[in-house]
Image 1 (tube, rainbow, N blue to C red):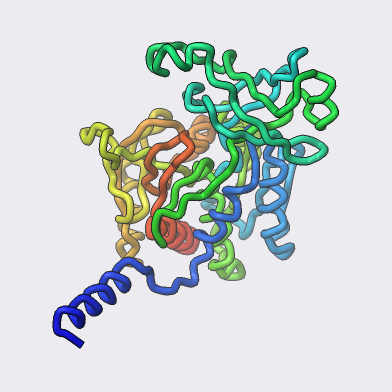
Image 2: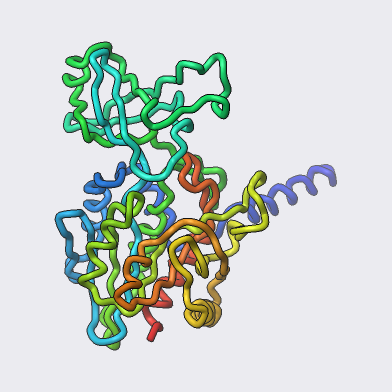
Length: 365
């Protein structure tokens, strides 16, 4: 074999080793990919709650209320620490079926309506999923999207029929949930983009951490793991639970909206993907007491868990616990393109966050 060919083979082998992650016993990444494909628009989280509830061992005595909040509590005494992730995602709800068979909708959660234009969507009916497409605006050929207003009220979904009666025959009804056609883009073995990473990633982290903790050893504190609903439309699930748990500390596990993207301003919220979990020091709903930011950081460092600290926009479920005297300490992964169809996440950050939740559960006092 010629020397140049040998070098090329060795280079290829080195690149393969560098790009391919070592085998891992973490489950969060695979759980995330499984949960991303489950629809759960705010107010319609039942299928996601079913998945979570079925994943919790009966020995942990899982609880579920009529809103579809799911949780379990272990241990007794002080402090009471709560970890919470939300099961809902942004999306649409069928509001009206027109006489010519088009669907009018209302939005659930913050989104730019014009991003739906021309996209394939799925309507989840009592008869099963129905495919549809968001019709382009009337000025599609004459004006660019940024030159033409396109709001939620302008969205019309075509499902392949031309009358209201035919739409009803398909099983479509008002209040059915609508998502884009779900797809996971695996950009590399450690990087993916999809709709719904916020906050299925947080849900996956709690499920993975749950399996890693020896709950029989949690005897000197009370710990609750909570998967709540309707975060995207007003923190309603968390508000329902906050008044009953009497928590001392709450750790919301949700996206850190990062500006680690080519066209975003690098002056704010720039935490790079792939460099660890995140402690959200400040966001739009909360200022984390600095003493607790430092405490989480020390615990992470003692376990060799990579962690970053940053400020960003957006709220978190823990903020509704604060009026009862609870310290709100949000934990995150850096996520790019939040509330879009291509929310991006790095596997190493998800695994670091899982390790951090385990470490805090076992050592926080």
